[in-house]
Length: 188
Image (cartoon, rainbow, N blue to C red; front, side, top):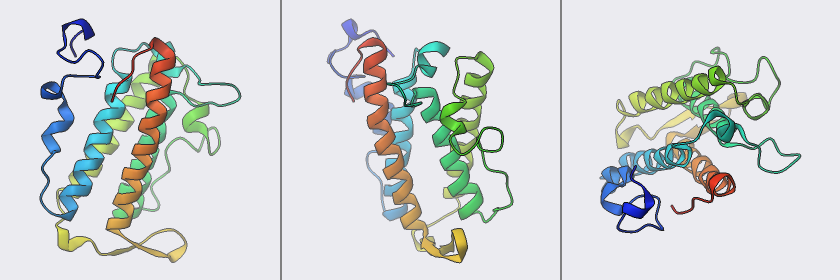
């Protein structure tokens, strides 16, 4: 990404013509629309973390919160893993991410400024988003069927994708504030 002083719109994160999120701007059909929004929010999270070192990524928001950009990356990897692999692909026996060692909030609590932790978080997030995309690529709008989720209740693929978009949107807002606290950078 270019330096803010060299951009046409220095108050924006990137100039509109350089925004990688624009590649999904014209979806066709319901499934592609959900997937477009999901990809866009994924890219937003990645953009908000761009250029930060391990300490900055792991920096907590305000005590006693354990919220950090690195924690968000780990949390979103866990969310993608849970919904795409465990629920939508039906592999509920697959171990959950970031809970076994440190409890239910290990995605945030374990987000520390260790290069190995940071590298593993990005690897997990990229692996899980790629797995989600691979599964979505096999679907059609007609496949917005019901699936079994937790405790034998059912939901639709549509509802799960809406939930994922909602999850990313909420955390992209957190990422905006976290990034601004780190280096003052703002924008969408």
